[in-house]
Image 1 (tube, helix red, strand yellow):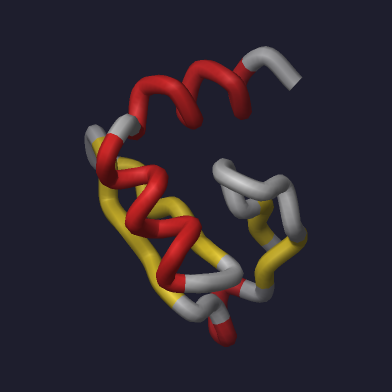
Image 2 (spheres, rainbow, N blue to C red):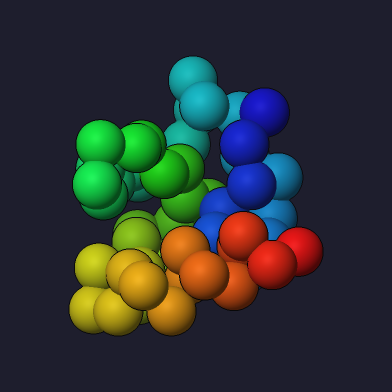
Length: 52
């Protein structure tokens, strides 16, 4: 299981609504809207996820 970096929801990698690769790492999203937010400002979400 992965964590959606935008909303924090737990996401099954095999059933993720969307994915995005940023700096060589794959991120999984519960919805396309979360992916869109992530792709507009990925550093904001990568840094936030790293500090949790």
